[in-house]
Length: 391
Figure (cartoon, helix red, strand yellow):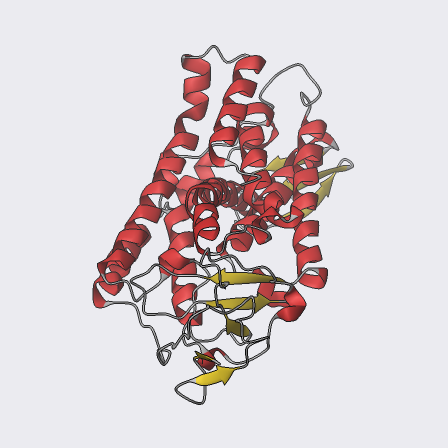
């Protein structure tokens, strides 16, 4: 018999097959401690996040600065005067195609593709590893999906504007009202869209760096951790997952380097960290609320390889059987100061990515000549650095 933790008793026994452990069991008897009942963030992490949030809120751009920055030219100007995407209509259609891919993929996952996340933790963690099952609207819980949806909304807004203009809609500022309104004049539609343009700008300035943050973290943290802790990356190599982890960055790089002139302004740098902090607070609040978890037990050959992790194998039970869980191992709140270091590391990567997007146009034009081949080379090089498709 092998002993494993149970939600009702200190230990529980499971039968062996032919006196040997099954694929989910160690060869030697295993006794797991009782799970934690809660995993509140350490005080220093709370202070750190509160401090960062205060700085971010203080540094948010004013509405007037956003209104001034979101000029119509930003949304309708193409990167190159010749080529297949040299018109406003073509620019808008490509952006809408990106948006359609993103939003349709999201809808498909919600309706037809439940998935599992293996919550494997660092050795010093006090949490018990598990496999969390996501289906329906719960598939929207990972940060990857938050960033993915925001990118889809951003391309939708930024694609609408050049298409409206190309079909005779004149987008003008309204000095008398900041609300969205329509008026007909000489068969032309004048769209007073201060808010539309500001939302389009802000959404891109948040979606672009967070998209690349997802790709960087997956390539350099989550993928290696999965290989080390479970021995396989089946979940990461699904088509929809590869799209969310790689196509997101590729589409952003194509937009910035080859399509249009959407900016990522240093003066708006507080927006992306605010998005990240909101997700961090969400993750903390959800740690004890996942309701579909099964125990994670390595295979008997000690290489931590899970041979069978099909969605229908997940046992539906309350998270009290395993205690608090986190989707991302680096958000674990039981690691002491490592928790705060991880938050700072994520912020550093996010701001570094933001800096890259803030300077890439200047570098391309001022130092590399600004030609199509130069832009394409930089796009491919950056994508190859952060994207990953196989082990």
